[in-house]
Structures are given as C-alpha cells and as structure tokens.
Image (cartoon, rainbow, N blue to C red; front, side, top):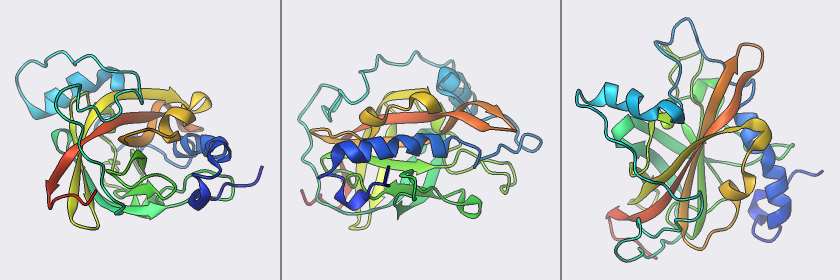
Length: 248
C-alpha cells in the first residue's frame, strides 16, 4: 500500500487512517530504548498515574480521579458546563506544556515516512515534540496530534519530552502555544495505554466536530529486544484561549 500524503488527508480520509495505523506501532517500537541502568524509575503508566504524580508534587493524599468519557466523545464540551469555546484559525504549535506533571517541550511539524508512519524526533532531539502536519492545528476543529519520545539512552536520566505523559489524569490542563502567539488550553478527558497491535487509529486520527487534542508516546511493557509494546494516548478537548484573543 502506498504511503498516504498527509496534506491530502481530508480528501482521502479512509486511506490516511489505514496508513496511519503504523504511527503508534513505530512510536512504540524498537526505536526507543529505556536507559534502565541510569533512570531512577520506569516512566509512569496510566494505571499508576495518580500515585506517581502526587508523590512527586504534593505530600497530601491523592484524590480519586474523576469519571471520564469515552475517547472522542467529549467533543469540546468543556466538561459539560458553560459555552463551547469558538474554534481557532490555523496556526502551527510551537510549544506544549502540561504544568501539573512538568511537561514542557518545543514542538515542530512532522509528516509521514515511506511506510505511512508518523516521523518522530531522532535521539538527539528526544526532548522535543512533533505535531503531525496531517492533523488540525491546536484549536481548529478536528483532532490535533502531538507525539514525543518517552525516554532516550542519550539523556542523563533517560527522561524524554513525554516521560511524564502517563502521569496525566482527567482534568489536567494542557497548554499549546501557537505561532500566532495564542495559547490554546485543553482539558484531559482520558488517559489510556494501548497495545501496538491494537492502536485506536480511528479514535486518534479520525474526524471530530470540535477542536480536540491527542498526545502520544511509548508505553506498556518494555524489553531490551523489542522496546515498548504499546503507546500511552491522552485525549483532551479545547477549553479556550489564554494570552492574545483567538482568531476563529
């Protein structure tokens, strides 16, 4: 099957989704190796996100996570309260932060390789994230997809840009700074870990009627021979703009 052209994704949606099924597989595969000897702990996984994050951030007992919707069904409702924020115009993302868990990384655009998988940063840029240029820009209608490594053997402690992604939880704020100076805010709906062989391509890359955000990194089990066997996927919806007014 020919590799999809991400710039024509909206006119060849089904073909692009089939080709992008490899995106999760490549990100979670043997291209990323955890520096087991140097890292203080393996990266957090969604099943343990609460205890891991709260142990780092606060001495108080953690509170129970809120109920979460099915991925892709919150559709920018702002948690079911208030008015739906107006979508933004196109502007490329340049930085992403998740303040509660300490994620803070520059973002640059990326496309697909010859096999249809999304190209992620090489090991020399493991502290950087990439935005898939076949997806919406943050705040536009549709899913905006941002990916990054979880760890790298080239970093002192092995912790790459999305090391703490599995520690996010429903309600966390994700902030994406755009090239036009606006800061698009999102609220996390769901945090999941999925097998490489069962990547939810439709839920991640499929069309939505409101602005959405998808964050992806490696996750699941790990072996020196095969790398990670899955992906951590975070689903979030657009809640509004900080900084300059949006240009919907």
